[in-house]
Length: 78
Image (cartoon, rainbow, N blue to C red; front, side):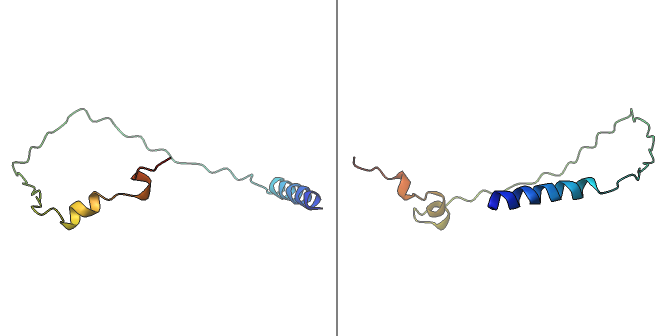
């Protein structure tokens, strides 16, 4: 019964998909653009210094979060 309903449903969907009329053709306007052969290189003299944080303490929050262990990492006895 389930297979019969499924096949009827698939046939119904295929007929409705074929019944749609899509005869409208969409025309697209094209734009012609020229090729630029001149390039200008700009150099900025500003230098940004980035700060890296170093943590002195062993139990700092960042190190503890980055060095987590899961139960899958622990060895098991056979």
